[in-house]
Image (cartoon, rainbow, N blue to C red; front, side, top):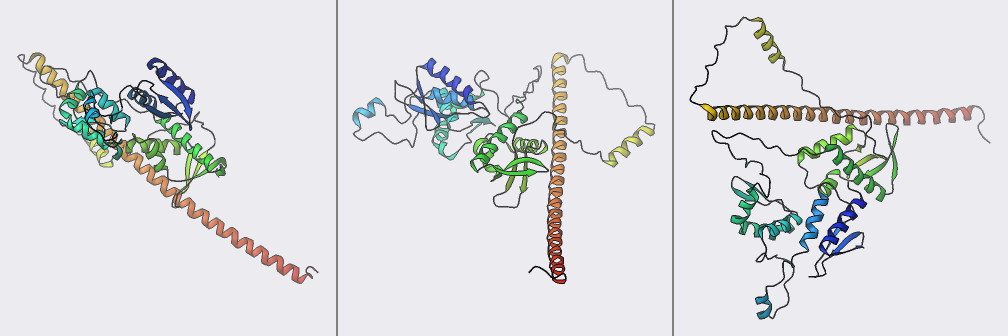
Length: 378
């Protein structure tokens, strides 16, 4: 999570550059464009790509309000200014329209030659404007000088071209886990910082659904990244669900962030015994020498070499995909085992508590009999 000082430095730099005004109001930074009177506000702290979103929010104030009527309409229409329900983009460029869409939570991308505009329901007007101008938006998004290529839209190289595979930048699981832990600590403080221990380790109690916190503050996470972040917090002993079946669940949250000597390793799946037996049999059996591959025709030249390189790249990508699937299955099996162990511990704890209550009742009975036969208390 970005500190408040970093957010303040960013806002001061942007407002000074654009000639805007900023002030602290109601626990948020309020930004005002004195030329057109437009205002906007941003939180004191940022998470993930929050700083980039803040820059976009500030630059939106350069344009007139999207519901402001055109000069011709203002001169002829006697009605008051329309409410901010349906934005108008008649004077917006494609770049300005996309900036407004991003600021309102839309994430437009191109797949299969079609424009997709996922996002919150409140941003539906911006999605309709993008679809209405898709003939302009699609070329803008697919242009490599303005935006990166979306998943599924990588151009298939032709013979003679070099095959390039573009990979998305990996997320920082540790940083996102620390940010999520910070949100849980703040939520626990709001609930009074009720003490709670986990295996002798002091912490605080938080009551709530972790999925709701992630959905509200980290809406850009996909299901796989959310799972990895939650596993990271669990394995590094920063969070633990003490009562998963409660409504809402009860969580233990560590007091401090400590990731010094803790490591997260991925368990490799055990090899299939049939595969191992087949490999041993293949080694012990003398096989006939395989025929040497025929040399490529000299007439192929650079085009044939490029096609062979592309095929090798595709095979490598498929192998990496299969390895990722195996790692996912292993992690899923490990999670199920941890959940089963947790349930067994809860059952065992209930049994210990029952034995403690029975022993306490028996001790009370013995004390009463002893007092009775020895005269008791007068």
